[in-house]
Image (cartoon, rainbow over all chains, first blue to last red; front, side):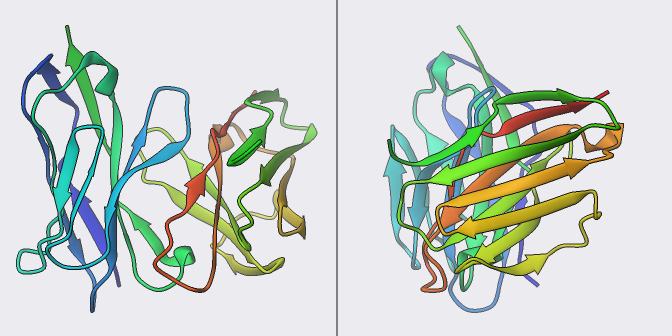
Length: 112
Length: 114
């Protein structure tokens, strides 16, 4: 079956540090890949997505590139802010949205 | 109003109570979902409705009873819950089964069973 593995947290960084959250997946064919973000007390919001190999999704300074050869979709940001503190979920979609598979989430805390 | 709206945002209930969670989507989607998010555990898909028919029920206890009266509304009826049912309950919607379409989530209902 499909699965998503993301690095365990929590991750604590100082403001303006570089962020990488690793995500790898297992799926047949070519799934779509997503990063969702969950701010404290809120639901999940779509942060970015990529639907085919070598696509780069980007939003709010975050980027992730769909790497078919390494089955990865790592999330990066060059300079994090305190407001980026949240839980980040990697997810894949193969078929209809009922088959959306989430990783376990990575808690990010950014200190001023 | 747009997006996916859940009410209430917070709910405290006793184990003998009956309550309902409500979800409404204004995105014109035809599929809706209930997820359970517990501390230290991955997101759990509970129920899926597509075109108002339940298409998935992932071994959820019968004390949780979903209802989808139309494509815009989804309810989760709760009765005789246990303390371990305390969690964040998330509703989502999508356009199904065209595929390749992400799910849009509501803000969740934080449920505490006492």
